[in-house]
Figure (cartoon, protein in one colour):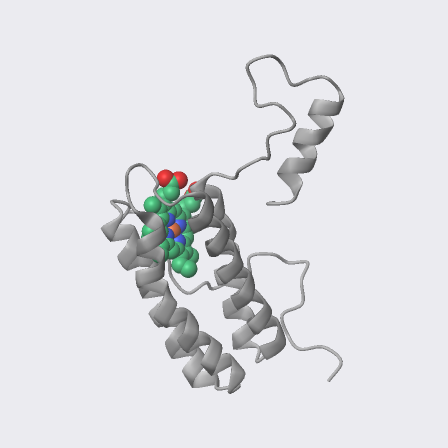
Length: 155
Ligand code: HEC
């Protein structure tokens, strides 16, 4: 989704559909803080299904995607609605994310499950601290998409 929107914007700009008063095509598209969160939500779910299937390569990839997305979010949005979200993301998620990386590296299924639940709790702690307690994340029960294989392939 992150890559799709700028393309749509470029097409609109090329067609001359971006009217006066709107963002000029030369200014880069900056996704809102909530859009980064939605992307994180999908990756959080994919991470679970990758780890659950012991697909450690995919789990490591999804974890990196979560980190990269959050890095972009904090760089582009040091604050959101007056809340210092960048600092809070670091304070809440650095430890859980590195615990997950260790469990994935060690191919430790129980460690992965524990670390995943700790991460999820940290997402929710931050939502509460950031006046968004009504956004509650949990372990997913169905894959977020049906067109991707989560089990390891070719082995
Ligand atoms: C700053 C601490 C913070 C952390 C850490 C955090 N969030 Fe958020 N999250 C927010 C805030 C603030 C919003 C509301 C954004 C808005 O106003 O659009 C939000 C919104 C969301 C939303 C709603 C998006 C939507 O548009 O429906 C989801 C889903 C979400 N977060 C998932 C997560 C997940 C998953 C994690 C953990 C991997 C996480 N968040 C970690 C602060 C945080």
